Amino acid sequence: MVFQRPSVFLMSKPRTKLPFSEETLQAMLIRVLRPLVKLALASGFNFIAFSTVLRRLYIEVAEKEFALPNKSQTDSRISLLTGIHRKDVNRLRGQVLAASFLTTGVSQTSRILARWLADPFYCDAEDRPSALPRTSSDGGPSFESLVSDITKDVHPRSILDDWLDKGIVVVDQNGWIQLDLSSIVPNAGDEARRHYFTRNLRDHVQASVMNLMNEPPPNFERAVHYDGISPVLAARLDEIARAEGMALLLKLNKIAHQAIKDDPGGNSRWIAGLYVMTEEGEADLQADTASKTETDE
Image 1: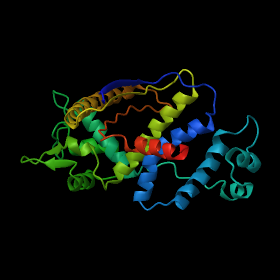
Image 2: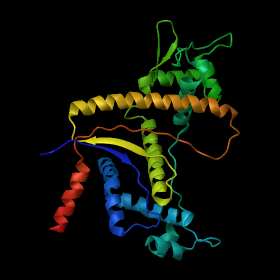
Image 3: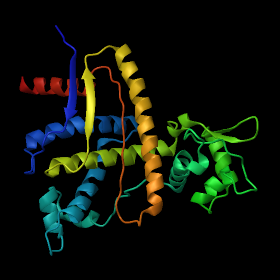
């Protein structure tokens, strides 16, 4: 008999001594990397290409983050840390991997949308993004002023044409420009989706790694999950979580947008993210278990 099992995942205190045992870390990495290997294979990115990236990344991280105090990082030490032959370290060292896929277009779009969603000047009495005229002669809010608040390098008409083509905005019967809130989720082929996949996943992994490597855990990371439930209940919970999560993100954006006006600035980053997922079983966990059983036999 199978019982529905409710559970709330709360991060327990992590180990303060590293590294983990090789067996434990291997099991963790298999679980985490499986979806990325699936993405790589689906994209035609084979093992040779993947291992080349990993080799360069191992060298870069060892050089930048594992140097001894007051000592220069040598090829020999990097080779010792990574297990990569010293000749390969010497050959590949200094070939910096691209760390960001943040294009100018993605950055500008995000900043303009953030202002439209948060600035009272561009929102109505119910804090929803207002419909905007293309221009305004009396200093009132307009699409032109919205774009000009963020950048003077691109003409507002060029951004409007691009957003109309992508469905980010529509022009109503009065000729005013309205934001389509559903467009905040990029289309599958949009470079913005690839960018946010990279940045958001990196930030979540970074937060989790820092929680494992430090005591007490510095980052807030929580999840609620229920296993063995019906598809109907899963769909209902998914709908509620999406709505509540979006409301929270919009609220945080508004608070941050107002607070940053008086902030002196610095070198700190802050990010709050949410993910909601419905899955039929845990295919990767089942595969891991099956593989271990076959190995044990």
